[in-house]
Length: 224
Image (tube, rainbow, N blue to C red; front, side, top):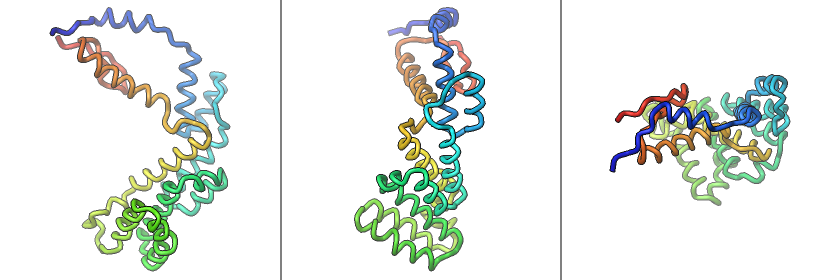
């Protein structure tokens, strides 16, 4: 069955018929700035657009300080900052607390503090591993780093990559946002995912000017 062909003129007319309020666009921008932690930009946008954020902007600075601490490997400092912000975050999220403690163990191993790392693993992480099989497996993977002098040959060497720090930092960031009754991801991200899904569905039925490059949002004429 042949697909319906929608010309650029037809498509642009349909797009122009969709009316989006500037207020809604401003809220979308503010949501992105708040969620991603751009506190200075959010404050400036609040003044210029009159769009009020749905959380206290001072909490963004505190949240970003936690995220930066994890990304720099200062896990003890990060845990203290989280508890200062809201002690219930770690009390009610054992998985997050374990991952922070795991990251602390990784940093001890990275810094060559073998004895301290083994003691920390035994005293702080092993008891949690006894209660949770997945925790135990993660602990075993982490401790395996100590068995290799050259971590480049270690099958779990990726734990020492900066990406592991960023992964843990993102998890903490999401937990703090959730505790503040805020979305973990910007609404803009969800809208872009929805756009991709909608285009994939429409591809089955029609040929139309498509957005292939999300960064430019440029319409590309259909190939017929």
